[in-house]
Amino acid sequence: MNSKIYILSLLLFCSLHSFAQFTLRIEIIATPSAHKEDGVFVAGNFNDWNPANDQFRFSNANDKLVVEIKGLPAKNYQFKFTRGSWQKVESTSKGFDVSNKSVELSSDTTISYAIDGWMDDHAIPKEHTASANVHILDTAFFIPQLNKTRRIWIYLPQGYHEGKKHYPVMYLQDGQNVFDEVTSAFGNEWGVDECLDSLIAKGKQGCIVVGIDNGGATRMNEYNPYEFAMKDSASGKIFSPQGDEYIDFLKQTLKPFIDKKYRTLSSKENTIIAGSSMGGLIAYYAVLKYPDVFGKAGVFSPAFWTAPAIKQLTDSVGNKVSSKFFFYCGGKESEKMVGDMNEVAEKLGTNSYAMIYTLVDAEGKHEEKAWRKWFAEFYVWMMADGYNNVIRLEDQ
Image (cartoon, one colour):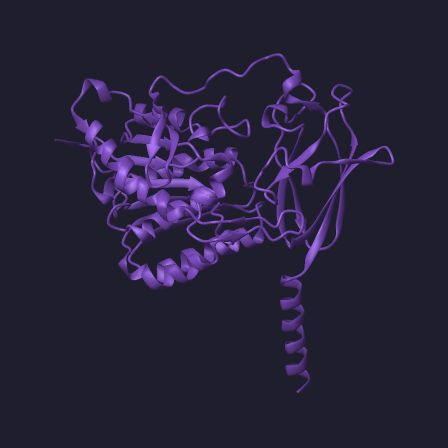
């Protein structure tokens, strides 16, 4: 009897702890001498990485800059400091990018930092890093499903213009961050073009890559098929879902355009969709919604925490799915993110006929550097058939 009471008490404690909310107090104890008059903000995964949200602006308190973020559930949080834009983000004293700061929140917590430099104080401008095989397809491609326009990038593999081969196509979300460091929101890009240039030069199969820019302030809407509420008291914003409209755009508008204009292999087995964070969520959802269109998916650091209903959807439609999935998550992102990914992958494996590759990098953080590190692994596996043999390009 005592044992049962103890177990019940333990379960009750765990349940209460999982719904607890905490306060994160961030203090900045030193900043560069320049720009003292400017406001300083914190941008992180608790405010959709908004670099200029007044609710996350530091205030002066006893010779320190202080911000308190209340109502945060227990999880891992990552963030950076800005002076109101990503062009004015913190840097090292020599102007180099700094990694995301990270805290595993499980109680009211106070942490202190010093800012060594600001990126805009260093005169060396960034150079465009996109390879010669990358082009802007359109700066304002119309999305009828959302009544918006968006910049679209395209990578054509080396030799495309000299031959008659048809190629698989990969649709990558957050196109700003895929090819070019200048346009990347956080100062780092995936390096997809350099990676593929290198792999193709070594004899690996080529692929057309289409990068679709995110909508900035509407990213959380467009990359989620479900309504999502940011549940901290500082920003209780509700994001209305536009994920279905966005995926319909890829299927009904963008893919037919690409298949008509370029030499593509248009079957599901040769149509890949990928993304990270919210982009990973919508890439996964795309395959569940249209399993006969998207046959392969790269699901990097998926933000399943913003869409818990994705688990039920996996249970209900999994038996219609026979696609190929690559799941990746970093061990330093958060236990919940890793746990959610593994739970979804396990449900998918139980309920579908999918081929699944799951990878957790214990040192991985929630950033482009991590996704860049594992992109080649993802790509080579995706280009292999069920027996791990590379599929040869077809002449048509």
